[in-house]
Amino acid sequence: MALFSGSIDKLTAAGVVLTGAAADDMDVDIYVLLQGARAFRKDIAADSTKLEMAENPQLKQEFLDSLKALNVNPWLEFFRDAKEISNVKIHVCGLAGKIWGAEKLEDFNELVDDIVGISEYITAAQESDVHLFI
Image (cartoon, rainbow, N blue to C red; front, side, top):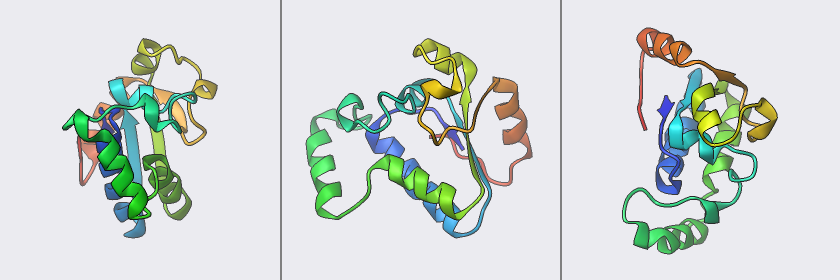
């Protein structure tokens, strides 16, 4: 999965897809690119107020309220749960991290496994059975 978006709605959608794949016992590699890298920064990942909506930004509070009313976990919990039940690796693009002032692994949320170059993502995409770009 290429996770380009750093918006709360798309991160939530990616999390739902990810947990479905993990529940189906699939190995998943997530390559976090550009805006996605910002969302995984340690100081931003758990704070939904620092993330915007990609679609219909004026509906952000309604979206968050609906998730809460439906007892749906925040996006980061989907990623955490998936890593607990299956082989899920989260790789951050080094350039994307640098763009957002995060150059070291410790600059990111603890779920991030490593920082890689774009060629690793390209190779993985070529070799994968399923490839999603979110």
